Length: 153
Image (tube, rainbow, N blue to C red; front, side):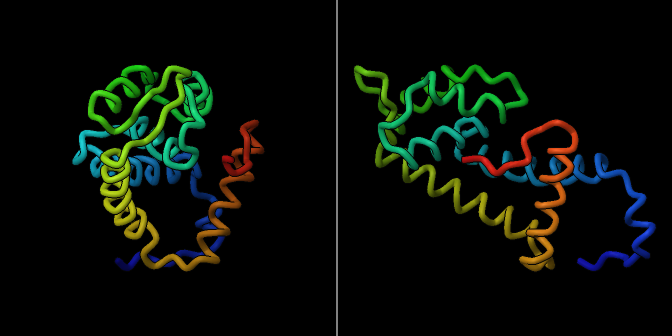
């Protein structure tokens, strides 16, 4: 898609909140739409990825502490965990450790493939250096506004 070119001073005067809001709405909306194909929400997705990244290394309490700062919908995480367990995608042992099952990993990979297409679409026409600059600018703005501008662990 072609977009109009403007003088730098015109771009510099743009409201960053309006533009970041549009990006959030469009990208996150696209991701949520693709997750819904699997009957998943973002908190489901986050849980699956964390469980995949550290098998048996997360408990409910640890995941809630880790994921709550990213959740802007007041998610009842126990409902998410219970749903994934009921689907057979996640198991919970006697010590409370959560582990992704083979079926859960297959579902996570299907959702990952769909999400990747959304991200690829968002990156169309943006080279890596431009993207890195954009992320670093946003990190700085977050830090300037009192947030944590560091990348998540």
